[in-house]
Length: 235
Image (cartoon, rainbow, N blue to C red):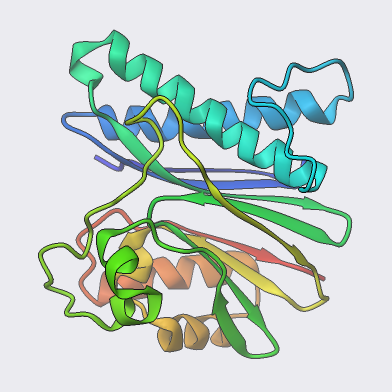
């Protein structure tokens, strides 16, 4: 059962990766619901009509950050409602990383431990923070270097769908020609450190090839989890 799900709509500037969790097929349901809900709200707000903003608007943030974080929070509401309504889906959840490109700006939002990286001029930077117990206690760098077999390595402190609301991490970045962005589930970054991801990206000539190689390399190195990679190349 592949509980990862992804979607990309270049005409909207929207890219999403979700890694579901839950018994039976609940994780698969959660990841699908989340991606669909995010897509729906971004589509509605792109049309320019009258839209209700159920959580209000953060005036200090750009409209694109507001669109994306609201979309993720609506996805959380939808997954949580479905889990509450159906006993077999109770407790399901999903990680989410989402990107919204508008002009020369890229807004991103994240919940959980799926990640977004940026490769710029040969230097790879992780743009998201993991919502994990290790990262919250040890810090991002120490958590990354911790024993892969640590029993709390994959304990999440925030996911979409397990509570009635969620606060996504969010930021905005200015795009530079030649930038490459990688969105991936932990089935990829759990086996590939920054050096390995950089090596794969530099060795491939196109975004589809880079994504395929990232997944294949993670599997070659023994990943037993669902592995998903979405690559965005800025020309």
